[in-house]
Length: 222
Length: 76
Image 1 (cartoon, rainbow over the protein chains, first blue to last red):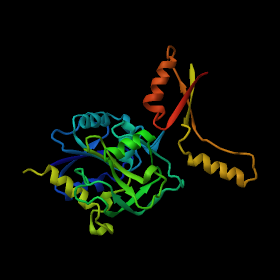
Image 2: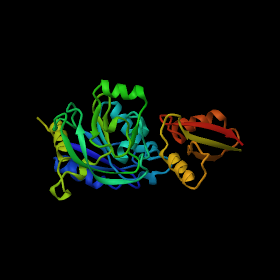
Image 3: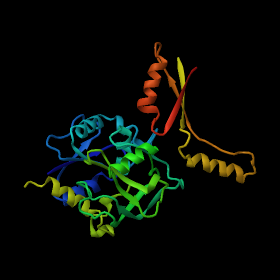
């Protein structure tokens, strides 16, 4: 089982994400943004949180044009798995891999605290360790987490059961309380909250660990 | 050769920053402000031969996120 974690200038959750993958049994390659290819045999690519390129222009906009993101787009077009967390979610929307965009929080403040997330679907490699309807405690830490998509896109996401997580109490103004969404083939997850920051008892919570355990169940050799 | 690109949030997309500016103006006593929308201005210095179509391409691929933003190009 192999995971790759992309490192942009300004990423700051890359090592946390790598540790979460390693704890779940993955071997992890850290991949620099200037690399034009992903390592051979990678099962899943992690796009970490942080402030890639200082959030210049728009969060994730410059990162989305980096050489490694071209390889990431090709990886997902071939049906490869990926997870984007926080800034990683912003990068995935800016590349067009996931629909919608992340706007400035409605309250204009950077918010850093643990929130209740409702699992909306257990039908994905990322969420099958939870039951739909479960509320899990996961930290958020963002200034631009206010998910926006037009009415048509929201209807499609709902019809196709692609809303992975919603906020129990909406902290940022996101439409329909959306905290995380899946791609059409359910192999790419983007979410603003940080499951990798709730994956060890030292973190003050372990509700995120089930996400990484579920992924290891998908890729473990039979 | 220069061009100026104006990038604004689309109508219907909430602009919390513009709304905060409106509140502040109201609190300062400017009571005739009914709405504020905040955007970006990007100035491009271009080599001879660059066309408006080139700039449109730049806007669609990078300078604006057309999911949430609209843009206008001004050749100056």
